[in-house]
Length: 569
Image 1 (cartoon, helix red, strand yellow):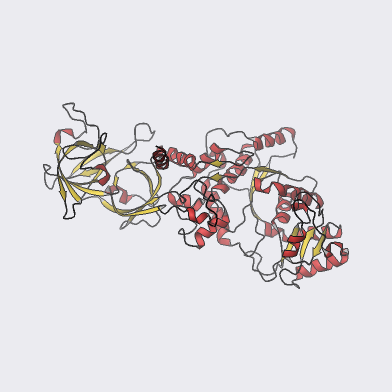
Image 2: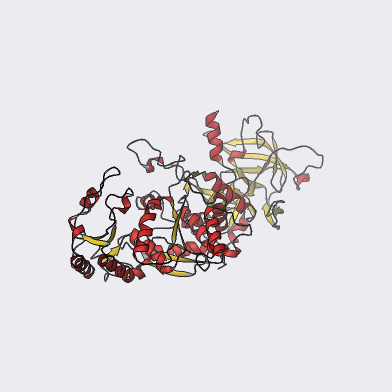
């Protein structure tokens, strides 16, 4: 696994967080290099928003000679699973990062309980026996203070006894909770005696089993876990800004003398996409996609299966940078990063998605030539050639033929001459139709003097199309993946509807019998290509020598912009 320092040769962009860290280092504020962490909850798969945070946390540690921990904030036994732990580790490694320590908040349960007891003893926490609804109601509103719970005035010894009995498993779920004792009139409602521990007596934790009966809430565990690990800068997204107050209060109340500092940055909001775990889970569980690694999903697993390279994700994260305010990012910016990355890396091949038979009537029957094709264009530093078979019968794309072409249509039409990529010039002489009037075959002639593609007499031919030899071509399934949602903001839907009503019904189109040049059948699964004039593709994990399957990674250009512009005319 490569170290993060070797990921990209471009210098890192400066932002307000890196400026803070640079000042920490320059002033010796923490007497060591920065210590960051990436703290996912193992209740789902990582997505593009997580990728931005991963690049930030690991990037800062690398750039400033610090450390970055991978810590699983696994404090909710009802939703977490080891399969998510494994998936998260796999995704981070695939992105190219190596963590300094693998840690788990569940390993701190004993320490967090000790802190809880110390808070009770110090009069800074109490056991509340109200119901969840009562606690919510008595917290007050933004304009009115909260109402004290009867448990707020319990004696310390009684609180301590109840807490220990909670830990011992004497009470059912919901009977009691531990709350911090702060300020019921605080303008930040999070500070109105927030919940610290709750009972989950019969829950099974994937690491701790059923032995542990009380579990810390996120706000209790997160900041204290940072402090236990010696994190210097706790980087989180803006929705946690109001939680900074309880973060600081708990770390100070627990007696940490060199507390971490929380810094918030704008989370990633991407057009035509949802990045909420809750919504992604609905897409999976309700069958709108085929699992967390469906290539339409914005998960790291989905992007990887689609064929996106880790380099493109890192470059995209670097390009959008780190900001203080939320703003939506155009999905086209990500697709542009993917195209740019693939353009310089992947070979070109010929594949016909919508095959139409062409018969060269003057080409010798039984003859098969081997034509030389370039693997990369001239503006790519990679080189190499391959041979592709050429014969009397070919497949061309049906979209490259029109019986009555409009002006500026430079492809095949009756009497029209075009250039075959890497091959000869051909002229359409006859159109063959079936009984329903559907074009089923084009009968053409070829010019044997134009094998290079350039006529010796200098005549100008404007159109060049792709093709494959019919006898040698391999049939394949091509999955045309597109944006999962049909509108930029999937949440911007009519009243009474939810984000699912914005799903794009054409997010997956399967072409069952495309034709590809035969050499690709020898390539390993996971090989990426540019199908010339079509887009970038990768062979899927389900692909076999008997049944080739290709996923479209991204088109050659943004067809959505074209459709939007068309609608504005």
